[in-house]
Amino acid sequence: MIEINNLSKSYGKNEVLSGISAHIKKGEIFAIVGHSGAGKSTLLRCINGLEDYQDGSLKVFDKEISQLNEQGLRELRKDIGMIFQHFALMSRKTVFDNIAMPLRVWGYDEKAIKIRVDELLELIGLKDKSRNYPSQLSGGQKQRVAIARALALSPKILLSDEATSALDPNTTKQILSLLKEINERLGITIVLVTHEMEVVKNIANRAILLEQGLITNSGSIVELFLNPNKNMKNFLGEEEILPNTGVNIKIFFPPNVAMHSIITNMARELDIDFNIVWGKLEKLGGSVLGSLVINVEPKYELKVEEFIKNSGALYEIIKESK
Ligand SMILES: Nc1ncnc2c1ncn2[C@@H]1O[C@H](COP(=O)(O)OP(=O)(O)O)[C@@H](O)[C@H]1O
Ligand SMILES: [Mg+2]
Image (cartoon, rainbow, N blue to C red; front, top):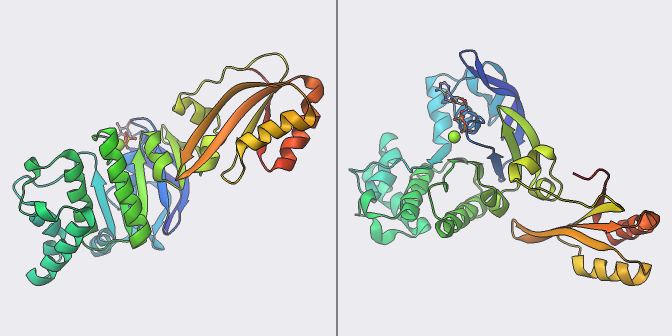
């Protein structure tokens, strides 16, 4: 649905995106994560043609964005809704008129507008706020209105630029579950930019880590959280302190593998001692996944490896201590 190949973008001499490739599939929730200044918003704005690019290719619905004329861009943006950190609502307009705005721009008649806006108010759960002004709403409610406005023209893609960054954790959860619902019920592909990993863990299917315009890690959420590379570990701020004697084995437990039974069976069946060094459970997109580092004496390494292999869990021998 969105095919990005070797995309580069500069502001003057400053290259802010370098050789970006990502293929975003229809119906998925795809996250772009990274620190401030990494180029996340710029990448998002390239997708809806608000920014041009110097090199590479960016196709949305099989059309090369850089080759679209004004009319083509207008049509493209009709299919791509966008929401922002600070909502970008019009303060002098009511909730109803904010949501109706794109429909008015496209010349819908007032009767059709009323039907569509009521539908959207129902979806976001704010039917009773229709005549209120943005200043009378909470942050979460404002973001709901912005979401309704972004969906007014029934886009196929929703771009979200830090949409929950100005919200408290509880409101963030509610907005994320609304986005998830929109993705599942309406089949809308969502590309979300965020610097918060909680957001990604909660709803994304796949993600890329962007650092100074480069993709430094990418994969499914499960891969990224259970087996992050050095860059991702750094970004997550994780430090694993491991013993420097014995062998450290990191075990990953996919959703269908029960962690406790493997561990207790291993101790029982192999009749060996091992230390649990470090472990965590993550709730990723609704399933609970675990990773655990154990430390065993070198003479047991092969036996343990064999046992883990047969159990269906994945593992990695961590050679050097960090
Ligand atoms: N309009 C612009 N003109 C010049 N430089 C820009 C412009 N917009 C963004 N940049 C620069 O591009 C880089 C990436 O910015 P941005 O995409 O906003 O990052 P992020 O969204 O990840 O915080 C930054 O170094 C920023 O200063
Ligand atoms: Mg940004």
